[in-house]
Image (cartoon, rainbow, N blue to C red; front, side, top):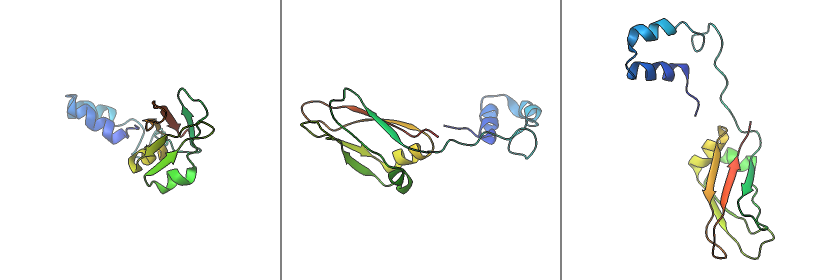
Length: 122
């Protein structure tokens, strides 16, 4: 999660640094238009996924799915002789859209589950 300069300063005040200490560092660059600008937040460029202990399963999470942001269930059978389902929630799509990584346990199939890792590098 990316913290803004303002959130960071509020955290310092909450941690007991006090207003004088915050005022001393408030002159650093950032939100106020002066100094060095804060880094841009990560955004999704192209989703990618891996499946643990894989034996023929496949999943494709499209950029359109990430952009839509609606909960979706994927079937990941691929060339395996059994299927699994993987549910991605709307909140998880929002996390992906902001450059996050998900680790989701598939539904059981063939007497086991898989960990599906979905990444959205910028």
